[in-house]
Length: 108
Image (cartoon, rainbow, N blue to C red; front, side, top):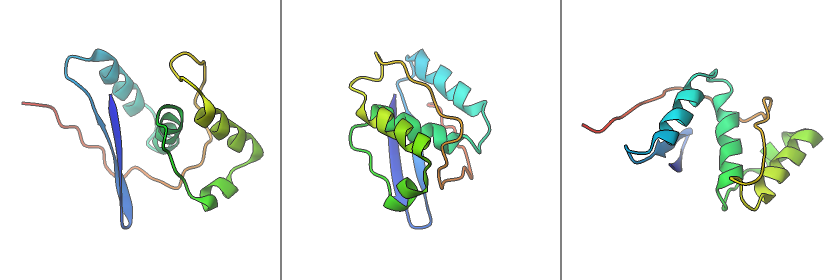
């Protein structure tokens, strides 16, 4: 599965793509879609911190986090390999994003 983030003035877009023959991404997206859209931004940010090496965020956001939230973010960012390191998503990670639209595009 590939994850891309595009920042635009006044918003942005998160795009997940994968090969049609890969079933695990389908299952992940179905699970992601089943949770509240209020929680999705926090889940996506944690996924990015755990799996993407070059992740950047604002000092304002960082300074708004509690000590526990900062500890969790550090742990995600410092993992050597998230596939072999057990970790969980934090339910209350505040992210200044909101989901305004979910678009599914299937080949065909």
